[in-house]
Length: 297
Image (cartoon, rainbow, N blue to C red):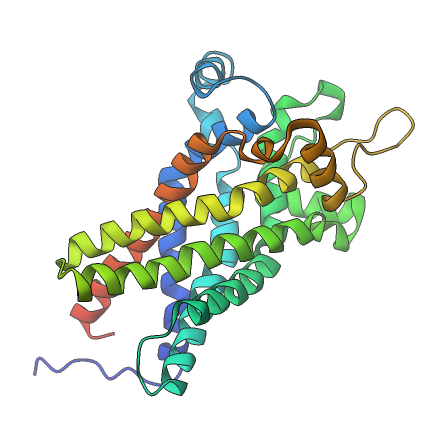
């Protein structure tokens, strides 16, 4: 009577992955329209307000949710893998550290590793998402007209081969490592600071740590995101030559043409896009864990 269900076996291992994926997918549903505008700003179509007005007028409200299926698929693969593996890595490190909190550099290493693992799983969905979002900006003859994420993946495999799913995976993995190092290490560190040192309550600790985590995720990853977007959207010219031979070439040409701040093009919008997603992911994750505790999972 009133006994909690016994949960053992596979669930404790799977739980961080399930929770991570679910919180990431919920956050994406909220953030997708801002992401759409961010991609168009990086493609040089004007300011956030101009782009939003034009999209509403010419393409309707649905345009802001173009690529939602790819966004959700990306979270289901990428965030499931990165948050799950980060929790497992940090738990193992804490156990090896006799249960004491980890130093920041160890959290950063766990974040880097988790980011790389997540990006390898999430790269195909990420490519589908970028292509679906950039499709409307291409000349009519060059448009790919993917119906949804699965159609995009099918077409990429059929037209370009299986390995094309990992096109731009190098910069995607590097960006994810930078983003997750900033996001995951700073979150855990901030929770310790707000809760243990400053004595904040649970809600303000989660919101405060999420905000810090969102800022560091943005600042660490935007240069890589800028290069990744340029590589993934490039088209060959009339002679079949691409503008960049690879990420390093793109980075060097960008640095030469616009200096280091060129990599931070659209930082306020990027921060508005990344930081709330990071914050929402942590807040949803916290809520999911509370509900699980209540039902005894």
